[in-house]
Image (cartoon, rainbow, N blue to C red; front, side, top):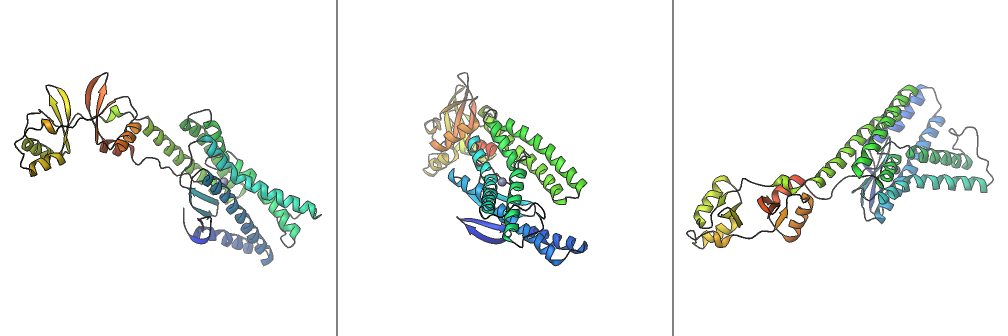
Length: 364
Ligand SMILES: [Zn+2]
C-alpha cells in the first residue's frame, strides 16, 4: 500500500496520495447527494477531510523527522483513506528510540490543537460550542475545527491498538522491562481485541472507515508480530544446528586428482582432510583446480589443507556469521566439549539467517 500520486517532497521524503484516497471525497459527495445535502455542505465536508489529512501529513513528518535524528531514513509517506503511513527503513529495536519516534506523531497534533486554541483565545474568538463540524466559513470556524480535529487525532492515535501509535508506545514501554518478542505479543493481543472492537462498533454505528481501520490493524498486528518472532528465532539459532557431517573426508595422502574427482562428482565445494580420525583442515575446489593447472594432480592434498578456526556449538549463529564475514572465512570447525563435531560453512549460515539487519516498521 505504498506509492501513488506524488504530492510534494520535503527533506528528501516524498509524500504520495494513494489512488484509493480519491474514494474518500467521492464517497462523501455521493452520500451527501443521496441525503439531499447542498453542495455547500458537501464542499465543507470535503474541506474538513483535506484539513484533517494536512494534519495527518504533519503527524507523519513528526515520526519521520524524529526517526532521522536516530539515523533512520524514511522511504516515503503515503496517504490512504484510513490515514497516513510513514514507511521507515526500520524501527529501532532500542525501546526508548521507538517510544520517542512514535510519540512525536501524536505530539504534532497536540501542538497544532494548542496553537489553534491559543490563537482563538488571543483573538477573542469564543470557541464555538455549536456547529463544530459544519462551519469553515470563518476563521473562528476553521480554528475551532483544527482544534477539535487535532485533539481527536491525538486521542485516537493513543488508543493502544498495535501497530497504531498507542500500541507502539505500549510495546516500547513494555520493551523496557520485557524481551521485545514478549512485549510485542502482549501488544498484539491487546491490539487485536481493540481492532475487533473497532470493527464491531464501526458496523454497529455505520462507521465504515472505523471498521476498515479495525480490519487493517488486526492484520498488520499479526504480520508485525511474526516478523519480530522470526528475528528473535534467528538470533536464538545456535551454530550447532548447522554442523555438516556430510562433507567428503580424505586422508592427507590422497592425491589432488582423486580429491578433485570426488568433489566434482557430488558438486561440493570443500572437503575435510582427516588424519587418523583427526581434522587437519579444509581443501576447497579452487585450490585443487589451480594445483591441477600446475600439473600437480599426483601430489598429496595434505599440504593444501587450510587450518580453520574453531567455534563452540552453543555459540549464536548470527555472531558466528558476523565473525566469518569480518575475518573473510568460508568455513569454521564446530567443537563440542573439546571434540571436533563437524564443519560449518558460511553459505549454510547465510541461507539460514538471511540478510542481516532488515525489518520494516510501518507506522499509521
Ligand atoms: Zn502516527
